[in-house]
Image (cartoon, helix red, strand yellow):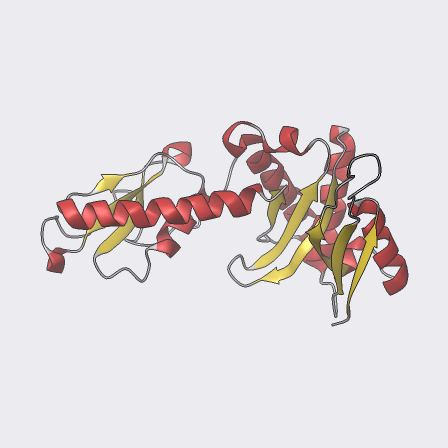
Amino acid sequence: MKTIETTAKTVDDAIELALKELNAERAEVEINVVSRGKSGILGIGGEPARVRVTLIDKANDVVKTASEVLDKLLSLMQVEALGTVKHAQAAEVGGPVFSVDGEDSGLLIGRKGETLRSLQFMVNFLSSVKLGARPNIVVDVAGYQDRRNKALTYLARNVAQRVTGTGRPITLEPMPPNERRIIHLALAENKQVTTESTGVGTTRQVIVRPRREFGGGRPPVRSQRGSEVGSEPDDEEQP
C-alpha cells in the first residue's frame, strides 16, 4: 500500500492535496491526522496541519457504501464535519472504522455519546439496506470512541480488582452493545473474574463476577435471556 504525508494550512486542505497526489477518492484511502497544526501568534510559531494518507489496495463494497451513506447523512444534518476512512478493515471490529472531524464535532457526539451512537446506527442500518447484508461499521467523532474505549478498559480492570478483593459481583451501568463488548474483551484473559450481560434492550448491563475457583463469589451463570458468560449476544444495536 502506498503511503504519503502532506501538510497544509488545515487538515481538509492537507487531505485534498494527498488525494490529488494519489489520484484517489476519500473512500479509497485510509487517513491518519498526524497534527492539526496551530496558527501561532501574529503568524509566529505556527505549524501546518499534517496527515498521513494510505491508498487502500482494493476498497470493498462495505467501505464505499458506508462512506457514501456517512457523507449523505452529514450533508443532510447540515454540519461542518468531514468523514474519512480510518481503517478499511479493523480486526477488532470486523469491518471499517470511519473518523469524523470538524467544527461541529461536539454536536455529533452528544450527551454521553448518544448522538454518535445514533449516527453509527443509521450508517450501519442504511448501509445494510444497500448491501443486502448486515455490516460492522464503527464511526468515531473527534477521537471520542478511542477515549471512551480506553476509559472503559480502565474501568473494567478496576472493577475486576474490586471483585477479586471482595469476592462479590459488581453490576455496571447499562451500556450499548459495542461498549459492553469492550468490557468483555478487556477481562477475557483475566483468570480471576468472568463477565456476562443481562437485561433487555437499552437496560442491558455487564456483571463482573469472581470465578468460583478463586473463592468468594457464586459461580458464573447463564442469564435468563440465554447470553453466554463472558460473551456478548448478537443483539441489534440501537440508538
